[in-house]
Length: 301
Image (cartoon, rainbow, N blue to C red):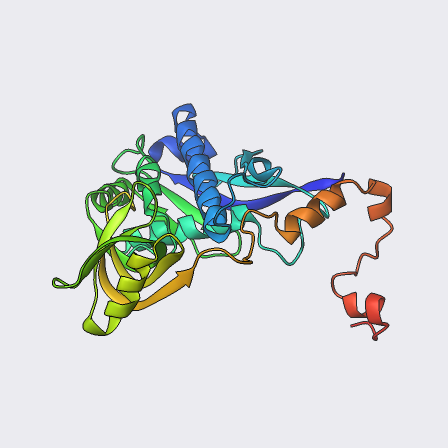
């Protein structure tokens, strides 16, 4: 099936050794590390929106693989591209690589400007980000400019700031569900086991005592959902609940949404891959702009 190259981000290497748009061979490791940052971020974002799914979609790694096909002037500008199959990628659906690059840019900008790291960034990826720029000298920097977005700078100082984030615990919103196996009514505390290895102690009020004791007595058929603020280790693991906003006892079993099922977009993409290229070529070139016309007969735009 026909495809095309699309530029998704530009990395501009600035410094004396990059003059005359020459990219030092040793700087290729920075490109490889940036690829790792983007790929791991894309995987984490996908898994966060598809809980319970174990396998990544077909061709996922290909869709997040960045390629360098030329070096442009302006110190050394490396336009990174992805090869996309058409029209397998649904035109209204943001691509995984675009989402990952956008978040990576926002994280780097926040660190550079001494702002909090954006919500939604998987903190366990901090070591991957902190591994970028190891070969930069003090007078060198990399400008990161996603396609259609404002650029941000990455310097050795930015990398030092990233390393400090790896040493600091933090608070963030939590929405977790687990099994209640221990409760101390006198102390107003219970322990919620999110999985076999992760248990957190949570305080509860007198008004919430019935929910907690019910979840404990019927723990074989009940689960407790907790929403509020949690404390996390620098590696992103939940270590405790700081504030509870809502407790909810849930029934185990019954009909529920199958989170392991494939998404409709994956089903459509797989079907699209089986259609011959010559059949795709028969589609009107203005289909996206005049979808209502071809389906309902409405006037063209």
